[in-house]
Structure formats: structure tokens, C-alpha cells
Amino acid sequence: GVCVFATSSHSADRLQALLRSGGFFKYYLVATHKKLRSHSGVMTEPIGKDDPRIHKKKQKVDFESGLGAKTRFRYLCSRNGMNYYVVRIFTGRQHQIRVHFQYAGAPVTNDELYSYEDYSMFPPMHKYSEKDLGLHSLRLRFTCPFEHRWVSFTSFPKRPPF
Image (cartoon, rainbow, N blue to C red; front, top):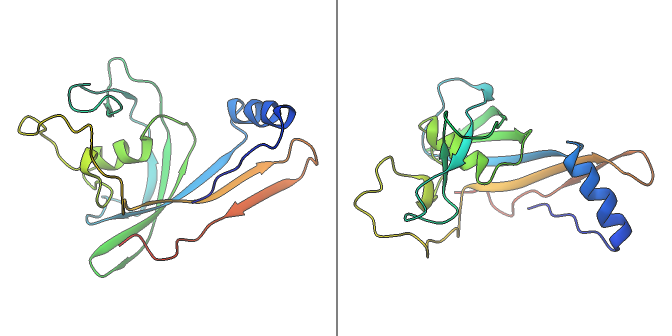
């Protein structure tokens, strides 16, 4: 997927400031076996920490103490039993897309950490695999803090996520 790296501490500071101000537009390709209820929409459920005994980084929708999160999605197509969505995140909560899609009843393909409603029968999942996860960082857009023009980086997957 798309990654951007700063080549100096000065450019890193400028990119960090841009990130904090919400100046990055991040788009993802999501594959799931189930369809969401609507073809497009916005998920705004707050996200907070889940039980650390399951996994120390696992998150969940938490209406009491979670932080605001905003995920916009649009259905692309179905192919070979898989449904594809383009997703834009407006906030940067940990595992945000994975949590929102699980909560909506359509977990991301091959996502061991967010594919189940009840984890009581599992031992701690500290060594789960994210290999072949149906999630791909597709595009990053922002205004270059040095040239003051829109910059866009796109990375198409070598193969569709399943």
C-alpha cells in the first residue's frame, strides 16, 4: 500500500503538522465476504480499547468511553463471492476500518482479530497473522507543505484482496 516517508527532520515536522490538522486524505480498498446494508454511507461509532487479554491492540466500538471516529465507504463491486469497498477515513483510530466493518456485520476478509463476535473460546491472540488481510492502502492525497499544491500517491494491489 501507500506509505510516505520524510527525508529530513524539517520535512517530518511539516508532515506531522499536516497530519495533526487533518490535511491527509486516506483511501483504502476493503474486501469482505458480507455486504453492508447500504451501498454507501458514513460510520461514526466511537472506538476504544477492547479487552487486552485478547490482544493488547484490539479495539472495539465503545459508546461510553470511545473516541470519535469517522469512516466513509462506497461499494465498488462483487467478484467471486467477495464484496469490495472504497473507504476514506477522516480520523486515525487504531484499526478503525476493521472495527467499523466488524461492527457493521461485514468483517474484513482474513481478519482473525476482528472476525468474531464472541472471543470467550479463544486463547489470547497475540500471535495472529495479518497476511492476506483484505485491506489495502490505496491512495494518499494532501497539499504539499513546501510546494503548496495537491499531491496524490496511489498504489493498486498486485492482486485484488481475495
